[in-house]
Length: 215
Image (cartoon, helix red, strand yellow):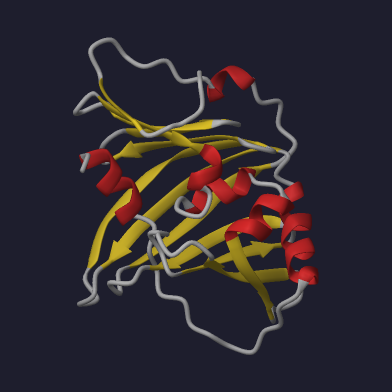
């Protein structure tokens, strides 16, 4: 398995506690109403992993850009670089240190890649997740998502919004590993150049092609 694959997914798991909540199409609509505000957005992010022994791993920082539906870019900048790009059809995961690229179909990865839901529409969300809306303080909203795919790489995810802006994502995997992803400098309704969602495979890169769609 590619180092880039392991690194990216291992950074997305954080403990989700259960609570009083409700589940129906209204939850999907409310989540989509929040995500619709991310029509064209950018934000900085920080994330860290907590292992099963409660030991906190190193912090990763970077920048993301989103244009709904289907366009997404996630650039990890510290402590080392990694890039994930979605162009509406495919997803590229690039590890520049190893010069490795993993290519997969976007529709198959929404349930595996939490951050991709930020660029998803309500139909895609409803197919990929069971969604419940949780009680939240005034001006805030929280949603708990469980992947429907038995092959998903996380068990549960909570996404939080504060005053209409995305605030954080929390995830948990089957091994008990945990991750918290926090967003800052969030800007909505940005003029995003679609060129940032185009990925050109670097010369000499090791390519793992798992996409069934034609370029």
